[in-house]
Image (cartoon, rainbow over the protein chains, first blue to last red):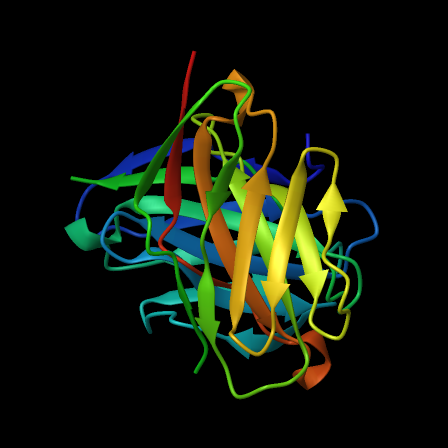
Length: 113
Length: 117
């Protein structure tokens, strides 16, 4: 168990809908990262938050947004969903701006139908 | 932008044998971090080993070791005494040391490792 908790584990929704994925980082970790894993794109970095502030952006679509709350949990909001958004979404956390390693949650499997 | 290439989509090895997974990367930076992550069927991403670019000594974690060739931008993973539990997707990943740590990991496409009993 990495200590990073993601909910829900599975999500099925229709095209055009909006969903929210939730992540609780390891105790004490200030950085939260979101990644998308799909068959065609592989694992892609979406966005990073550090202590409530956005720190870095990767290949995140404009339809997607995220935030980190004062209790350090984070939410990834996906809107106007398309079939191609079906993927495994991972959250990872690390201590401070640690270079050493990020601990991953078990992911949320999103299926858009 | 950095890129990570894993040229072996799939590898197969007999149990108890040794296997090496290849990874090359492209970067103009001199300070960075390299990682191997394992993703078993449970889909959990598990850190296997990490290497700091400024360290010349190759990292080792029990049966896992790396061959880090900075000039060649190569970072291979050697698994000794392969076990059935090693069967998984293995991802090589790069992270810049610049920007105060504000950056995500850049992953390769992965290598599917099969362990033959």
